[in-house]
Length: 237
Ligand code: CA2
Image (tube, rainbow, N blue to C red; front, side, top):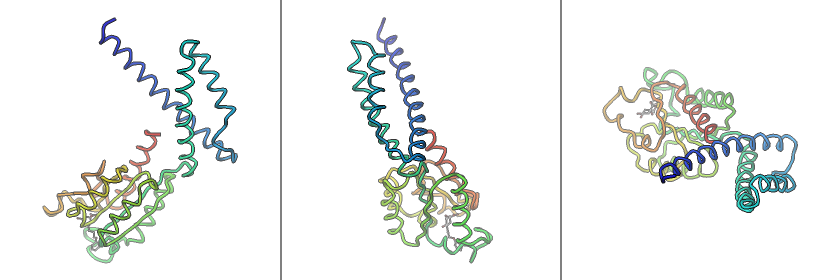
């Protein structure tokens, strides 16, 4: 067998291993849900010992120790994963951020931003998040630093960020840097179609740290952004 053939075999084996690992983690999620529903602890030592015995036997004498060691790691990772899923009630946690003047919605410029108020927007976001089974926190500020601090504090507390930085979209390197620093999956939203407006609205600093942008869909952009983050999380589960 030449080097390339051997590498092909390794690549195929890796594909199978990763697919099997994903399937195992999905099943682990089901176990986590069951444990949560029945108030059971995450760690089940007897079950883990049985799994180790089983894989060692499957691997055979020459590889039983390797299989045991590998599965100790896999089960430790599974436990962390289950704890994470139980900790957040299995729900994705989304932070929705709105920048300056969005609290004025419905009061001025209804031709661009519509007649609905900021309270209507937050009610819409909460209702859509509920339909998606997501936990959502909504934060609006007219201050750049407050938005930066909120982004920083999202690390370890949220799974994704939806952000309409409003006017800071086009000026704020600080918000861009904060989004990059936390490196959470982020989606940019604009009520209006910024691409069809003034030239200064064509630049988006925050957008450079976002996986997607929804602009010109009105309130629905927030729903599309949350849907995207939920779908993304399912794929990464
Ligand atoms: O289209 C969007 O969502 C924007 O982010 C809204 C920002 C604007 O600076 C961006 O270029 C695009 C403005 C939000 C201010 O909204 C107002 C609402 C009512 C009255 C005045 C402003």
